[in-house]
Picture 1 (cartoon, rainbow, N blue to C red):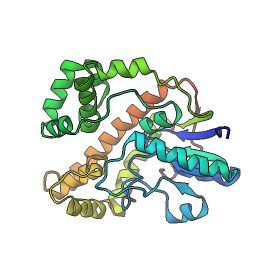
Picture 2 (cartoon, rainbow, N blue to C red):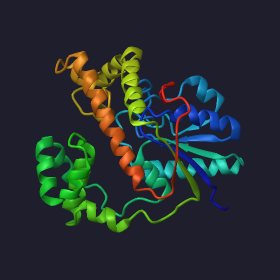
Picture 3 (cartoon, rainbow, N blue to C red):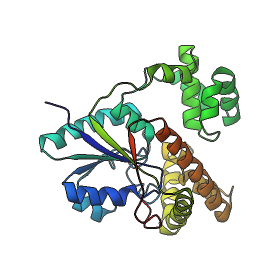
Length: 294
């Protein structure tokens, strides 16, 4: 069976992707496949800006609520699950609309995964025990290009880059460049929704405020209760890690909100940086840049 042509809608966080995706799906009869690394988790609705029950009842959505918060969810697992879902949608002769801002997931789906060694449980356990400052120091020594590219507070990506470098003996950035993501696994049309910088900044601030007022604190409290001293993957994510620090008494709510807003804006800039490396992206402007955040 010939691979279906995917319509892919991405863009920085809070750009309005979800609202636009619903409008597109209504017009085209498409089913939506989420490419969001946090929306895969059950029970994380407010902090991930998950589509509402009404939206999901109107338009079929896939790859939401497919993992428990105790699980790690990898790009390889996303790729395999997305391939299965896309085949099912194509068999129904429906269009496929992939929507999300997790750029690694999109690359895995559209171009293929990097050829890197699989995780080493013993090495990972050793790295987990190190403070973030030591992870950064070792990565600067072994792979300065990755250290410069990855945000200094992004422990997951910093640690994975160091892990790859130590396992392969080759800087992770070099493996990434040599791979080049040249494979094209599906025919696709890639669109990016990118409001102006000022509009995006305001949308991010509005989203953080809405999440804090809309249940993010309660969601994070439930996560901490389930963690029982452990570090659940979602507790490293934007919003959840900031509110967790507040609930542990490390930050005031005002400071947690300010840091979350600042870190989310930095994350959006990294998403835009990825888009600049993609030669086939077509940019869209949101018709209402101050409308509801997606």
